[in-house]
Image (cartoon, rainbow, N blue to C red; front, side, top):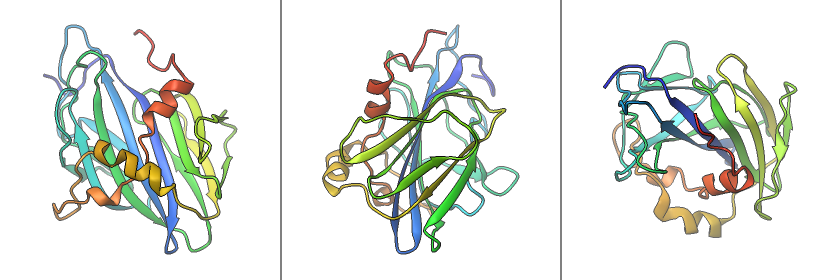
Amino acid sequence: MAPKVQGVFIEADVMELETANDQLKVTERFFVHNISTPPTTQWSAKSFQVILPADAVIDGVGGQRPNGLPTSIKMDPDGPKGHFAFNFPIQPDDGDKDTLFQLAYHLPYASGKFNFKTQVTLPADNVAVLLPKSMTFQATSGDAFKNVPEDPNVQTFVLKNATPSKAVEFTVSGTGSIPREQQNAAAGQQPGMGGAGGADASSAAPGPAARPAVASAHPSARPTR
């Protein structure tokens, strides 16, 4: 076990967006691999760090070990506003099973438009943004987001090979919800999530199971390292 381990990287940072009551609701999942040699768990008070919009209000947090059950986990403020750290082990992969970090949060959206400027804290093979057909997505920093027509009911935009040294920027506008039937189909696949007071908040992050869309559109998303 060590605070930092070589061979830890993000396969996919997946953000699912929808709107309700002048709020932009976000479910974000990070699929994190640990292919260290020899196999070593990365664990500290800052095992995994995330950067969210400064206005984000956290609704729930969850995680899952490579061969474990979904669980509520601890996430603490980590410096500047919007920066957080997870105190949760990133264990070596178990076959094709990796570590999942998931959080739900909401943002003010009375204007019907929001400009995202975020960063990954580890190299990421894919950053994916999913949103309803009724909403509009626009990359605002020259990033090469590609429209992936994986699902006829949901828009999917994917950026390949994001790095911590470069901000990821995009704008979303309009309103809409992820189709209910997809949320219901994925209900059994969500990590249990605890809110700020430790209460169960699993309902705060319904959303479809987004990873298959990214993986099938990009079968080489998990290169040998």
